[in-house]
Image (cartoon, rainbow, N blue to C red; front, side, top):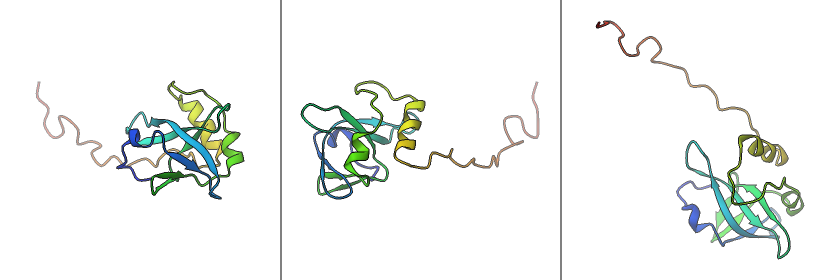
Length: 125
């Protein structure tokens, strides 16, 4: 998803599944704790139904509507954690597994500065 989109602009937009079937309306957007990037959308799936969490990556914002690459039935069956509260890492993991998304930890970055940290070369007392 485009990361330059203001998450507040997503609220109230319509969402559609991979077949173009309307899922509902975006109620809330959840940001990644570490990066602040929009990560999940809570979509109200109907008048008397609950909100379903959908991943914003690999979803797309097209002409003012969110297009989610999953079937409506899968979205409606997503784990229900309620809205208005923080998603725990365990809850996010459950959601990633539900959608069959890769949840492998990010590759570790080599520490090029190892051994060159504060005091490298000369130590002062």
